[in-house]
Image 1 (tube, one colour):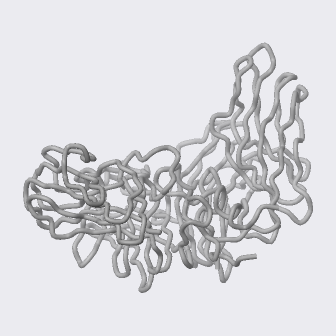
Image 2: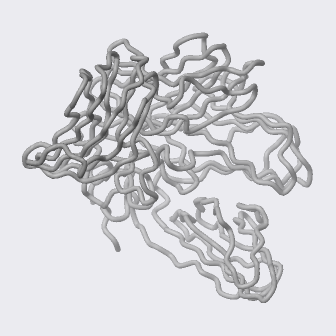
Image 3: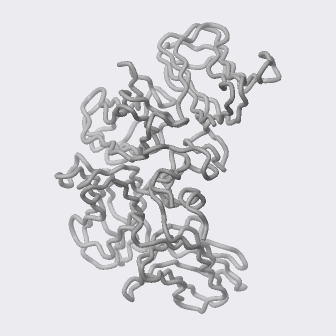
Length: 252
Length: 249
C-alpha cells in the first residue's frame, strides 16, 4: 500500500495523474484586523500554497470595507474583482476571490480593512514547490502582444480552471486566465490560444475584453489542454505597470 | 477491493492527504420503506462509513415527506430538514454528508409507505483520520465541537466531504435545531490556548428556527489545540451539531 501522499492526486483529477507532494493544510486565520493591511498567511520556504475558500466575518459595529490582496515582492495586488467589498456588522461573506491562486515561498495572503474587527479564515493547501502544478506569472506587460505561457517541449499542459479543479465537472465559471493590476488604466485586452507553429488570428481568440478596468482583478473563463509549443498570448492596447498576468497550469 | 489510487482521492479526502484503508462501497438503498422510521444501514465494528450521497424517491401517488437521520445509541438526530417530495418524484436537493462510527446507523423517517431511500456509503477502517465530530445535544453556553489533537493538523471538510476549493460550498459547521424553539447560536474558531471571543467569532444570529438546519461556512486549517466552539442560548436537548474533518500529521 502506498503511504500517505505518495498516491495523492490533484483535486478532482483522474487518479494518479498529478501528485501534490507533502500536502498539508496550514492555519490561516486573522483575528481582529487592524486598519489597513493584514498579512495573515505567508507561504513557507520550499512550498507552494493554493488559496481555496475564505470567510470574512465583521464584528465591528460599523460596516467594514475589505480588499483581499496577494502580496508579492512587497507589492499588494487585489484578488477581488472589484475595488473592494463590504461586510455588514455581525455578518460574514465567502467566495470573494474569483479564481484560484498559488503562492510561492515568501508570498502572502492579506486583507485590507477600513476598520478593526474583521476575522478571517482561509482554507489553503500547501505542497512542495517541486510539484508540476504552478502559477505562471507574466510581469512585464507591454502594449501589443505578450506571450504569457508556452507549453514546454516534451510536455502537455492543462490550464486549471476555477477553484483549482482541473477536471471540474461543472465548467469553468471564472478565473482561468486573470490579470491583477493597479495601473489604473482601461486597456482593451485580447486573449489568444495559439497552436504550435501557428500565429495570432481571429480563429484563435479566446476572449476580447474592452475597456478593462485594470485597477483590480479581471479574468477570463477558459480551460484547455495544451500541447508542446502551444501558447497563451495576451494583447493589450496599453503598457501596464504594476501588473501581473496569471494562469495556473499543471504540466505532465 | 479497489486500489488505493482509485479510492484515495476521487471522491473523498480532496487531494489525497490521507490514505483510506479497508475501503468498501456499500449500497444502502432501501426500497419502499414503511410509514415511519426505517433503520437503513449500520456501520460495522472497526469501520467508519461515509454517507456521501442520498436522496428519496416518492413512489406514492401523493406528495410525501422524508427526513434522513443518524441513529446513535438508540436516538435519532436529523441531518436535513423534513423534505417534501411530490408524487413520483425524488427529493433532497442538498444532502448533508456525514461519517458514521461503528454502531451508528443511517435512518429515514417518512410519512407514508412506498418511499425509497437511495444512498451511498463508503466503509473504511476506523483508524483512518477522516470522521465527523459530533455533539449530539448542545448545552447552554460554549460547546466545543472539535479540537485538533496534539501532533496533528486538521482541515474542515465541505458538505461533500471534500476539501475542494472556491467553486464549491465551503467547509461548514452544521447544526439541526430540534429543540422545539428558536435558539440563538454563535460560532467561533479559536486558536490553541485561546477562548471564544469577539475576535474569533465567525457567526452569530438572533435565533435558529425550530426544526431548521443551520449551516455556517468555516473554511479552515487547524493546528494542534485549535478548536471550533458553538455557543447556544438554550440547554434544551435536540440541538445536534457536527463538523466533518480530516486530520494529517
